[in-house]
Length: 208
Image (cartoon, rainbow, N blue to C red; front, side):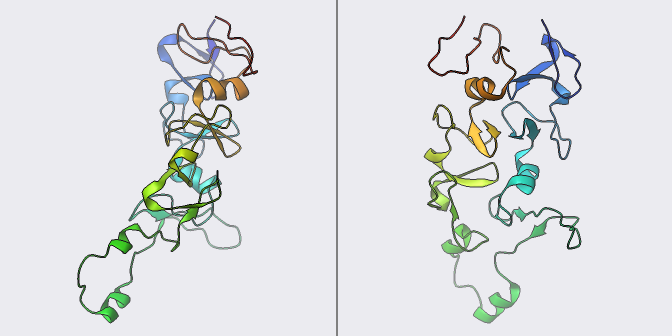
């Protein structure tokens, strides 16, 4: 029996479906809730069951305020605020000001430190272990910087890849089976043809 698309509430047939967040969608209905960009299964974030693109939308809406969400030369985004004028575009943060370069004279050579210093001036804190995350060991997902081994599924502990997992209440989960088991429609097959229907109890039996 064909399932219903959570975006348009119409029937999703096999030839037109993509599966994400434990549900079946029409391919063009899987869009970012904020900007409307079409998303790919496993290549987006989630908040309260709704899909969002990782950057800039998820980081803008739910990430730590004022944290650099990209690499060198990227932008810092802020939520629009009623108390101050809304900024219509991203604010670029320069690595060094022209006046500072003039004061210090001609550059003597490339500086390694400037290429790895974050815009905040110090490393961010990993949301899993609450320890500092340095450039060489970090991965960025859900608008935050993690130690690579700390980006794990909250349920099964499997190590995840940035952009290749689901999210619920700010915590990462693997798409299958964990997100589908915990937050997907109960009793719905969360995989492809020939996969299994999982019970919410990790210790329970897997039904063929």
